[in-house]
Amino acid sequence: MPTFVDPNTCNACAEEHLGPLCVYICPNDLMALDVVANKGFNQEPDMCSECYACVKLCPQEAIRVRGYADFVPLGALVQPHRTEDGLQWEVVFRDGRRFEFTYQSRTRAAGSVAPYQGFTEDSAADLRNQNLAGDSVWLGVDKLPAPARGRD
Image 1 (cartoon, helix red, strand yellow):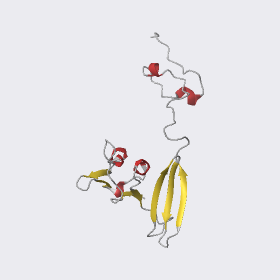
Image 2: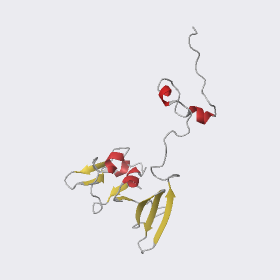
Image 3: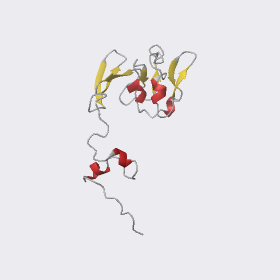
Image 4: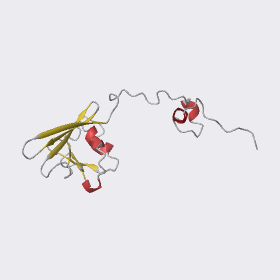
């Protein structure tokens, strides 16, 4: 379901200093700004990896999705809406029927995550070693072994 921008809804994130947030967030650099129309657009829909980062970030909900034929019949509209804990999908069929479902993509409220909370490492000392962040937590040890110094 490659994304596309509804030009009637897009305002190029007028209130943002970075410009359109979809351009900023797209990991494949597919979203671009049409400087003449001052609207965002997907310049290579066939290359879209369908990560929906643009959908999740768009404050105007101007990013639309083309539905796959196996769950959305031809002519139906698919519109994702951001919610506090994920995305709510709305499918409008050609006969006017609506189907909605929510796909949870968060386990905590937006902005409430404390990075590295509960890690046992000393962040200043970690910059001087080769351990990966959280190694001791995921390995279930209090401290990772260090190589002996001074032996030759």
